[in-house]
Image (cartoon, rainbow, N blue to C red):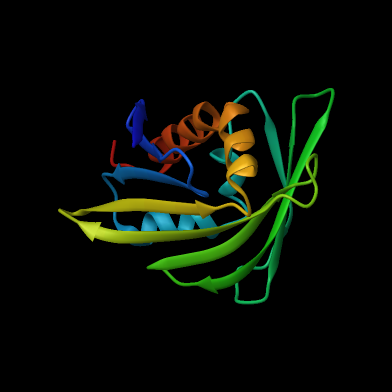
Length: 159
């Protein structure tokens, strides 16, 4: 099993499997974390690495609703989209697809558990193939995801 930590974010990536698990503890109430995850005005403040501006083009946070975010470095745009299957303060289930690699859709299940006055964030992304999962992890997604989690923590945690 491969577990590694980038900052305060833990990644579990096991050889030969289709999934990646991302775990992080936020010193913030679940309601605050859920709001930051689902408020179109807050999303650009934490989604992805800080060197990219994020535009929320669509964010319909309900079962059957869809989302589309566009990250930009000023020269190129990197669009992502998906569909929500379940949305509650305890759990969000959605698809995730990078439009630069169409057809490689993952299913993500995020749980937000109240723990010791804070929130444990656990996201499990299941890819269609081991190769698709490995390509995503080889792209540096852990560094980008960890930076996004750090930015989310700065937004929601008590000062």
